[in-house]
Image 1 (cartoon, rainbow, N blue to C red):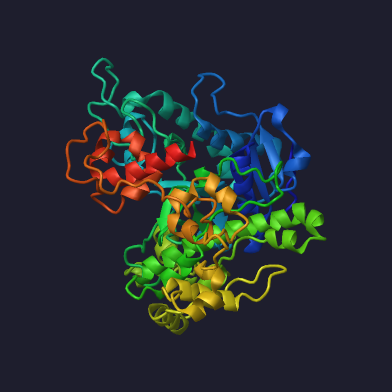
Image 2 (image 1 turned 120 degrees about the vertical axis):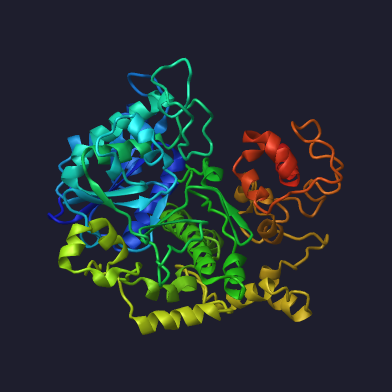
Length: 588
């Protein structure tokens, strides 16, 4: 399928790479929905690595315009299995088989959502100058790996990944070299792992920045190195704006930034634990929205998380805003799924009000919870020396000027807004914010202000009073059946339970899905009171009790570290791993 772009010169074409599977379909719905939601200029195209026998243009068009290309998950000539080959290969195929009329191309990963529009010209993109998201852990660009590969202009190699915004001519030239350097990085690991038997090998092991790579093997982030090497080879300078991308679950404030940067794009690529709620995109690999859209199935988002964040007076502003953006992103994904389900399932449910109500995503305070933060989306200077810049120095130092001195260098987007007085008012408000804003009012839904009040009652632990328990039965989940058993209060409980949420998100599931998780019966097995770490576990040793040595253990367990780093986790995170394995066994 060839997609012809017909937009005017100077606009931007957004593309993102996927594979043809249900796992990437629901992510694509999130990208397409938010692209429209924020008014991102220009067209958007999904680049799908898909064998011909699996292609279904009519079906995929229900989500987004799709350009198919041969899959490179297994390299066609060297047989290396690495699905990220599809990233450069998809751009090469798309640009060779499509007339790209836009001046700029915005490439992003599929597990991202737009939060506000991206304006390439305002960010400084032009021929020879690109924009990307900052990824500091590409250590090979400074510790000697890039020199071992003999990459020209090594000093220009950018620490970028996930998002690449280039002039279309630059991207057309860069894509083949991106693939070339990715191939070499994968097939020549001796250039960063010491090997006494190979005279070309590195003299010592050099860190790649990938925490999960086994020694002697090529890392998962090889494609990121391939892009950085290609950009350096072609002499393309990169600007790295602080507010381009936010990693969901990450709390950061760039050094020297006087105000909080609101991101243009949010990335939800890694497991996260936020305000007592956990999420991992991997849990929803079987979520099939095209072949099985009805009844609708949604991601589990903790409804109390927003309340807990806003009511926490001790939480620093940067952590509070980071938590709100993370929760907002998950809510937006559910909103995107809800809009899709409404198109697919509404005709079947038109005569059934209960069925129609089940089409709506779970109650989730959305953009109202972070509405005031929008005033922080401003054109700002984040470096202390910005006052020294004039038109000449801004042009001479594009990376520093465009990324750190946008106000002084007049690099402001039309989407930036707010003055100093407004920003300070918002900062003051957030510092004392301890009440919930009005909850989101979805299509065909009633005013949820009363429900929001009940959620606050539950968050504050005030359900014990008879009045609260009666008035807020749903939020307090205190309505008892004749048997004295608590009941599910969400039609999505069965789906959430199947994806392991009873363990991943026990507080939320205990409140909303006690039947599906059998919380009415015996509780899930835990590691409390055991005399040793785990029976027979490597490196366990005798201990008085099975405990966790750090609060990060649960997050590590969610990422699979109990198996990947068994010896360490058995000692340092005994309780989290015992509970995780008990849950896995129960699910099996």
